[in-house]
Length: 442
Image 1 (cartoon, helix red, strand yellow):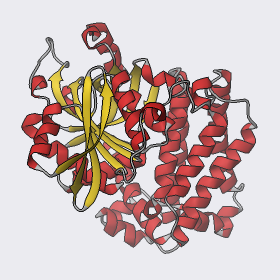
Image 2: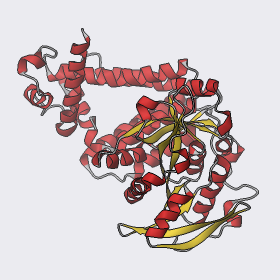
Image 3: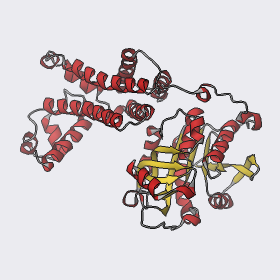
Image 4: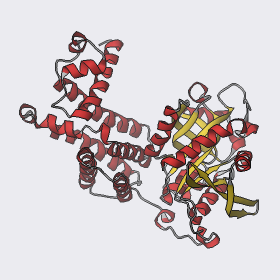
């Protein structure tokens, strides 16, 4: 089949998927799919003979994608924890998105007598998925990233929890905390933690130096641009409710109001250790959710230039995060929280890209060789705090939304400073508004 034919089939399946999610399998007709795909009857039947054929191919595609993704990452010798986190992020997102669930359609399809009798087709799909998951779990055990577990039992826990939530979400309202709790427990069962991960109490803890403030805002906004915060405080009502102290000086923590919601606002220090310490103390003060944003260097100009950059994951080329999170090379952001930011940006037609970033703690050691290697890994931007911030947030179970805006450009023959020294001031209203809107969706 030529490329155009393959694209048409993908378009048909994408159109059909929305219908199957909305109506189930039995109530969708080929006429419905014609209308949704904006194809003539002849155009549709040129590719598919029935809704059964379309649906079966969709099921096979979903299984193949997961299998291919895991096999590819294992061949690349990627961390088992990173692969697991990516899969669990997808599962969490799909469990929360009841509108896109195919669970009812799958049940109806495999309940059709002549299909259910064909070598037990649903069971065959189950076995394919089981083989893929078991391969990942054994890979993680062999690398000593996962505990020695009963692989069959853990797979059953994963697949039946996932499908159960998806099915029930079509029939009744589901608490959005359920998927998060399931994912958290699966991860806890599988992923080995070092001593720092098992023990929340260190010799020196944030609460030893920071006293909780009654009524402290649940949501806090933070950026790395002192000028941006100073400008916001100058033009808006803001009250100092706490301070963060260090030998570098005192950082005020403000209480602000946005759309009738109380939020905190504070400056994050540059660099992973200082930034992480500030986050720890903000959490100790009483923060429950954090929106963090700042500038970054562009590594892929065609993809990221002029856009809001949402990190899907971060390559951990700093030391702080490893004290909070097991030693995988990458750490993933929360997919469902990223989706909330994406929805806002799309609604307001703000250009954006979701992609991997590189967190380094050595700004003057971004060598051409290192840049080339990170670009090869798929990194589209470089910054200094993302992975450490994500690690603190995961360790303390604090939801965090992050985004970046491009400053200097490293995707050129020579470094381009651009507006790096502007620290985002020229577009501060835009960036602050995005951050505050994120604070509203928590």
